[in-house]
Image: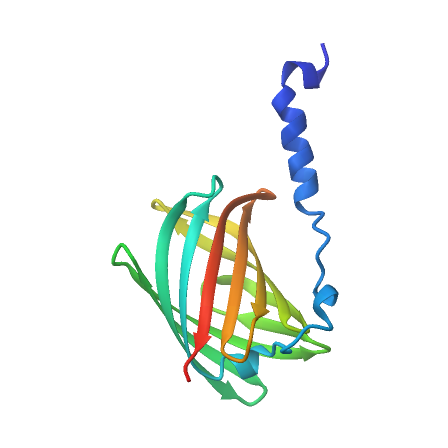
Amino acid sequence: MSLTRRWPGLLVLLTAVGLEGCGGVRVEDYAETAPAFDPRRFFDGEVQAWGIVQDWRGRVVRRFAVDIRGQRDGDAIVLDESFRYADGERDTRTWRITPDGDGTYAGRADDIVGSARGEAGGSAMRWRYAMDLAVDGRTWRVAFDDWMWQLDERVLVNRSRIRKFGLTVAEVTLFMQRAP
């Protein structure tokens, strides 16, 4: 008896895992779009953000707001983020993002494993990193794949896929607005 006959779902699972990393969207696809996204320019100052976290089924499992204060430090931008979750939890994160040249960026934060890597093109930016994420009393090492699109001078949309073992386990949607 063949493996796919014994476990027909296995073939579907393996196909999904194989296709998960084959997304055809590239930063270069946005090269001609405007406004040109530069994280050092967009985040310089006060930014408010609102978001949701959805589990792998699409169910909203968390809602949150973030106050972001960005300050230039030479070529870098330092982002102080203060999170307020609907359940009352509060958290903070400080990013230091520096340009590497040719539209690429590196970023560091205390809860990020190693360095985040990003590339920008036109109005878009792709930002990837690993993070040790606390979930229900356990810590999971997950991979974030963020896409950001600047809609105008004040509005940015961020869509993140959170992956474990190559499978999307959650998604985050975040809307950001620069202070006037």
